[in-house]
Image (tube, rainbow, N blue to C red):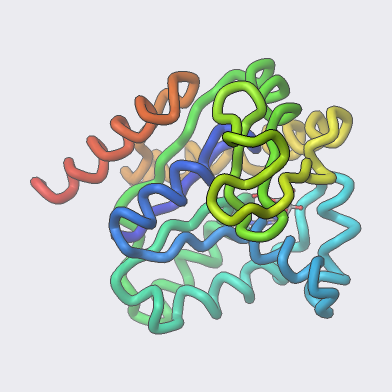
Length: 219
Ligand code: AMP
């Protein structure tokens, strides 16, 4: 199962990807997560990416394309993967298509577009917290941890992402509209796009997602 999860920041792609990846036993390849980890460790990649990320801009295409190519051609991804947060520009999508051709690896099965109005996104992101140790994501109102500020799974401290501050969220939504939204049409033309209403509960979104995934198996 080779999937791309597409959607503005805060639509819940990461949460859904985490759940489906676990159920299907395939890796969740989140470029945002890989980049944040590199920033935390102070690697050359992290040092290059940090300024872009903190201001809500996209990291240059060649940096993320190289990173994804390395992941997808690794043995861990042979059975499939969920690309969460990549591609984010038409140039990235084209590079992905070229990679499939060059390496002879099978292409995507589905591109899932998670759809939520911007006003709702701003509300969601201001309440988002993630574990500084295991990266599990919570929401202070909709999906709170049992103990405030503490991760249910590992006991790590919950923190707000630097780029979830209101002014940076608006910048990220603008970037989404200009650079990522055109991918909806790109994948629609390829017949790969599936739309999911992501304004409903986490469980209801997951049900829609499973329906899409199961539709492939039957077909
Ligand atoms: P995310 O966790 O997916 O919201 O990503 C956080 C930040 O990482 C983004 O705002 C970008 O600065 C950077 N990033 C993640 N994925 C990509 C990508 N595919 N292309 C460029 N920048 C990315």
